Image (tube, chains in turn orange, red):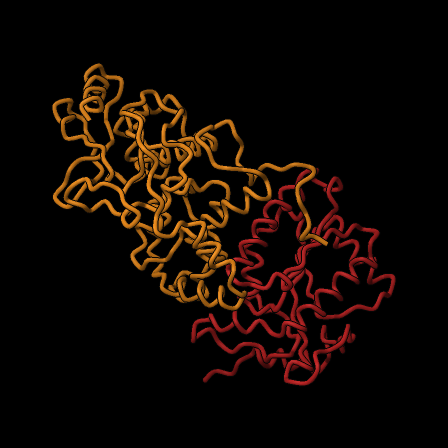
Length: 293
Length: 192
């Protein structure tokens, strides 16, 4: 932690960056913080409560953040994948940002804990299990000691997807339409997503209106399918959409399913290598086409 | 209540039989039940250069095929957004067909390669959500394959007829969504 504060102080003092975005201790747990004064760098923390994906602040939709000047960001491995996603799609240039990587041993499911609790199968964020990027490469500084692997959650995301997959079509339809019917169309999933970068979302277009705007099951289904499809092969599995969803739609399951689809069909796994092209928008001459007559 | 001109117009059309010729029976109709006389509505999104021309050839060659398919012509399969398919289901389609040029034949060189990936992912996602993949037919039909187009259409109609009307999707409609076209009719999908 001292290492983190030291680096942040140096970066701010020598003018390399104008603002450091990291986490601080708050009354109810950890929360994101913007630090512009070197004297404030002691507020920075990193522990298992730092679940937020701060890359959402680099999203080009948030031009008010870019106005602050050059940004220094504290990133976990999963967050670094989101940076790579923005770089891959030319939404960011590498020089725009200084990345302070932290070695991560997994985070809690919820940020709101008064103290940094040790991880257990009950409280660990399920996405952390099997993480392949706990020591990100795409960073300027890599801090902290090597961390142990995160514990296996009570039920992994892959197991939950497999359980759904094992059900008959009608059951899956019933499950998802019920989940999506809860949607209130607050678009929190989109707003918090680091990779939902469109300035004007198709959900807000009214001429023609592709996605019905009012929260009823039919429009909700269109919206949720579209959101998921637009993130196919791009989602970095940070789980922020589900964490922010006020009605608890298990969006992680759809996202993970899409990851499995692109992995199976195109051998693609999302990484923090911005040179690796995303599967949608790319093609191979011999792509599978068993579903085409 | 104001008279519904749309309904009237529909009635007229039916009377005059415009676009509503007796569909050719394809395959074995499901035995008994209400679905026996069910005429599915199928929306086909086809590319201008290959499949549309292929369908045209099927027509000029006087090939007999089911008349349940309504064709929407687009420049390229690469122009077909999965939202089109979702919209078709929303507007009452029981099935969809997406068809374009064979790989390596795309008029725009790459459009169908991109479409292939997009629809592979869409196909798998819809199956995960619980939509029967037999409601969605994807095919490559070239300009010379009128007979293949007939087979694609007939197979899609047979499949969707066996599955019955897509009531599960229609049940999602908001209550004030207006009167749905009567089940079993092959009324055109309203582009309201």
